[in-house]
Image 1 (cartoon, rainbow, N blue to C red):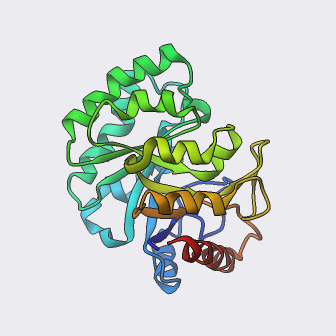
Image 2 (image 1 turned 135 degrees about the vertical axis):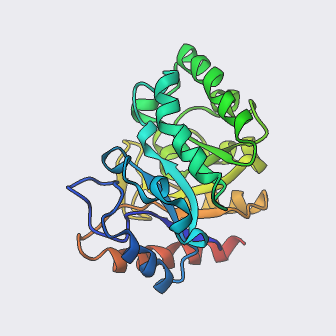
Length: 258
């Protein structure tokens, strides 16, 4: 099982933010190694966008421990604005071109939700340019929408894929078995978290996400991509202990089906 963790989950929250680029990112990479995790999904967030090490000096990083990059700066109502997309996505793409890191997650949910047909059409026109201009990068879209709507984006370019977030799919009421079967080989990244139908992120195995079904279905499509722990935070200061516990839970489930 190629299991990683979302950056920041192994360090205390920054300024009270649930998901933010961590101040102690170097120490976190060492903790990843101690836990024998495959690596991190690197975060690009608004508060540290200008001085994020990936954008400032991409070649100075331990690339082997960066499995993918999540561009959280795109979670914004301006997601369909061409200038906004260029300002926030182009620097990331250019930085990745200097590295061996090929996967980047594009979140189209919450403030960047694209369930609206007109907004999605505008986005498709712009994002296709990125896919065409950066053919060596894998653009992985994380969404809370029915598969047919998401497919309108994924089918635009051969290098467009899916980041399948188990909690998001639960909370937006999409059937996991149908979602996995629909996208099959287009799923190359899986975010692991448990959510309730009321959109609350909770401790693993305490919500409404059926992980046995999910891992069974992923096994049936021969999924061999990364799994990224994006699980609920527990006691602040005990992040290492929490992730170690969550790691064990999902390794045991994985072993049942793979």
